[in-house]
Amino acid sequence: MGKTADLTAVQKAIIDTLKQEGKTQKEISERIGCSQSAVSRHLSGKSVGRKKCGRKRCTTRRGDRTLRKIVEKDRFQTLGDLRKQWTESGVETSRATVYRRVQEMGYRCRIPQVKPLLNQKQRQKRLTWATEKQHWTVAQWSKVLFSDESKFCMSFGNQGARVWRKTGQREMPKCLKSSVKYPQSVMVWGAMSAAGVGPLCFIKGRVNAASYQEILEHFMLPSAEKLYGDEDFIFQHDLAPAHSAKTTGKWFTDHGITVLNWPAYSPDLNPIENLWDIVKRKLRDARPNTLDELKAAIEASWASITPQQCHRLIASMPRRIEAVVSAKGFPTKN
Image 1 (cartoon, rainbow, N blue to C red):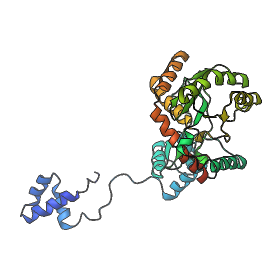
Image 2: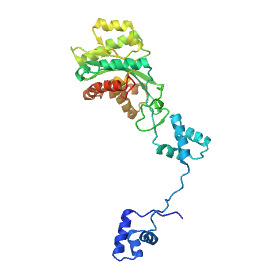
Image 3: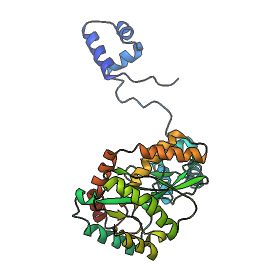
Image 4: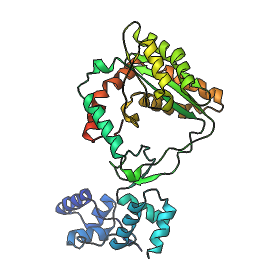
């Protein structure tokens, strides 16, 4: 028969009090709902230092250290993979035990953060750009019309491989993964400023310089008209081939529009990325079944974005700049 639970501090205090009042051990045990032997052991001091109840731990500290090395070697292994390698090292145990030990070490199974891996030259360009913009005010950033394309997929359930990581290790290179392509998707172009968002453009086919200039003509200019009126603004886009083409540059010159110089591989600096995330989170609840339903859900989610949300994101630009400077050009959490 297994050992019963130890008396609590409250039960022990009650036993001592009732004993002083002259109660018998039987009366005390009935009063607090424990066995008479438990009362006797407490009063005699024999309950101190009793062995713990429960099964004996089936792994040793040495075995646990081996598992830690296995996890840290490759963070993207499944529980089955971890158990197999641990067994090969000489530790026979169940998947449940593997999971408990990994949890005890502080690791949690999470969806990995996706970030570009930048070389030294790319990081230096980001750092130089951030240093130049370090003293820009929120008012100056409010003059920028941010733009971007984003891909929306029909399949939202498949999150891909998971990664074992501890709290604070979201950005660790070992815990990052590359993007996953899904079928049944649409590409969308959008723009935002501190005053709100502009109209969306659903893109058909691949974007080249000619089709991108059509987007600028029919969607970017109306966005600027809506958000800035007759005021001057600065246009932002990334360094995609269609964006950096000579004919596209000529289009901006002909229309008298200033374009913000932008470092490559810098989605963490573009606040519109946060708006795409907001829209995609809402789509998880909508669960569209067709491409037409997907487009309608995207438009509805985009239209629900408020000017207040946009202003908060624009106001975060100085913080984003400081983060890039502090990280010496490395990707940061946007």
